[in-house]
Image (cartoon, rainbow, N blue to C red; front, side, top):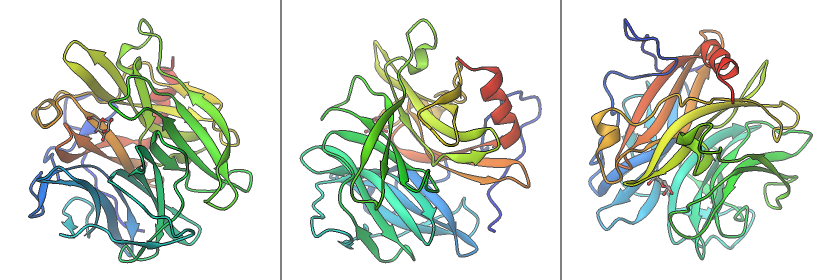
Amino acid sequence: MSNIPWQDRPEGSNDVVWRYSENPIIDRYAIPSSNSIFNSAVAPFEGGFAGVFRCDNKAVQMNIFAGFSKDGINWDINHDPIVMQAGNTDMIESDYKYDPRVVFIEDRYWITWCNGYHGPTIGIAYTFDFKEFHQCENAFLPFNRNGVLFPEKIDGKYAMLSRPSDNGHTPFGDIYVSYSPDMKYWGEHRCVMKATPFEDSAWQCTKIGAGAVPILTEDGWLMIYHGVINTCNGFRYAMGSAILDKDDPSNVLYRTQPYLLGPAEPYELAGDVPNVVFPCAALHDFEKDRIAIYYGAADTVVAMAFAKLSELIQYTKDNSL
Ligand code: BMA
């Protein structure tokens, strides 16, 4: 297995999740065409790592690009976007692509993203090598965002978290789970969790969305997600965690009342969209008890944060709503 990126908790810090000292790891201009590179996903691949990156170009067209890394920190991102071939459908229309997630299931890597088809919905593709990508049917009708697949089938079916939305800067949003026998037809939609009452936990009171691919632990599925509050200066995005029942992820066992990481560093506070911490991926190593979280900062750059897995789980239990 690839060694996941790691840096010890800074001395004097009590934070359960701490930032990488060299953040951001990917600059907004890391490829010639880019205006910004953020909200991106990575996975272990061939002894190193591969990823799918959201790069908005200088016309601010949103697209996804493959990238490769030996250490998970220094990335070579292709200069051209992914060109999809037909997968389980010939209908691979896409006005834009953004906010990818990546997961290995059974024999291949699956990519989900927000796909522009008469508005945002969930696009799905698979790849074996991060060179050829096969686009499948969109999972849902518009409008939807934040489609995140579970890394294994649940009760014999593929399972996906998603966040039904509207066509704009959605002012609402709850997390649902849906199931599919074949990655084409999705149903059995169940509500997982909703935005919180303002007085209980205001950082997640406007909308929430799944972030990283859930990690199966002894306590259930560890899900890292984003929560949003609408302030007088617009939306503020922070990161939280929840633990979902292993066999029925619509059953939320624990969910953090405090956020784990909120916008506080300059690269999170200032950028094309200020005050955004937007997790899209996490690498984990049970043996070393480590998790490395990748998040978009201020819709401009990619940053990383770390935690001890056991501490994150304990914190989620001890600080649950
Ligand atoms: C959401 C998406 C994300 C973005 C966030 C903050 O609606 O567009 O890509 O990071 O808003 O602007």
